[in-house]
Image 1 (cartoon, rainbow, N blue to C red):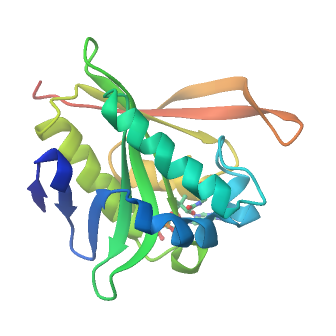
Image 2 (image 1 turned 180 degrees about the horizontal axis):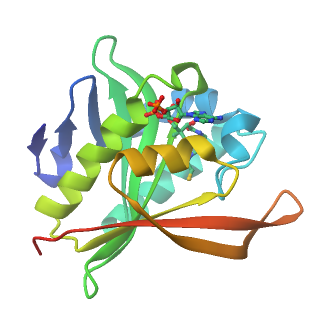
Length: 185
Ligand SMILES: CC(C)(COP(=O)(O)OP(=O)(O)OC[C@H]1O[C@@H](n2cnc3c(N)ncnc32)[C@H](O)[C@@H]1OP(=O)(O)O)[C@@H](O)C(=O)NCCC(=O)NCCS
C-alpha cells in the first residue's frame, strides 16, 4: 500500500484501486451508482431514488466536512480502467478520543470481488498510521451479512447489537456494532 498524505492530493493505492478524495467531476458517476435500492436500503443517509441533485449535495457536504475536520470521504477508483466503483469514508473523526466511524458502498456490479475488503484494510491502516486513530467503529444493519463479513475479514470485532437504533424505511432497525483497536497507539 502506498499513501500520499498532502491533503489536496491525498491518495491511497491498493492492489486494484486508487482511493482519493471526492471531486466535483465524480458527480454523474455517483448518481448513476447510487440510484439503486440495493445500496440505499443498507445505508442510513442514502435516499432512493438518488438524483444528480443528491450527488451534488453529497460532494458539497463531503468537502464541507473535510474542511471542518469531521470526515474524509474517499472515491474508490478501479486502477485498470480509472472508473469510480465506490466510496469509503472515515466519519465523525474525534481528536480527543482518537476515534472515527467507517462507512462504505460499492457499485452493485462489482460486489463480491473483494473490493470492500481491500479498501477497508487500507483505510484502517491509513487511519492508524497516518491519523493516529486509536479506535475505528463500523455499524451495519443486522441483515447486512456482506458488510458484517467485510468488517470481520478486516479484523473488526463484533461488540454487540444496538436494538432499534435507527429508523429507516418505516422501521426501527437493529444495528451490529463492530470496532477495531490500534494496539500501537
Ligand atoms: C457491503 C458491501 C460494501 C460489500 O462490498 P464487496 O466489495 O462486495 O465486499 P467483498 O467482496 O470484499 O466481501 C463481501 C463478502 O461477503 C460475502 N457475502 C455477500 N453476500 C453474502 C450473503 N448474502 N451471505 C453470506 N455471505 C455473503 C461474500 O461472499 C464476501 O465474502 P468472501 O470474500 O469470504 O467470499 C456491498 O455489498 C455494498 O456496497 N452494499 C450496499 C451498501 C452497504 O451495505 N454498505 C455498508 C453499510 S454498513
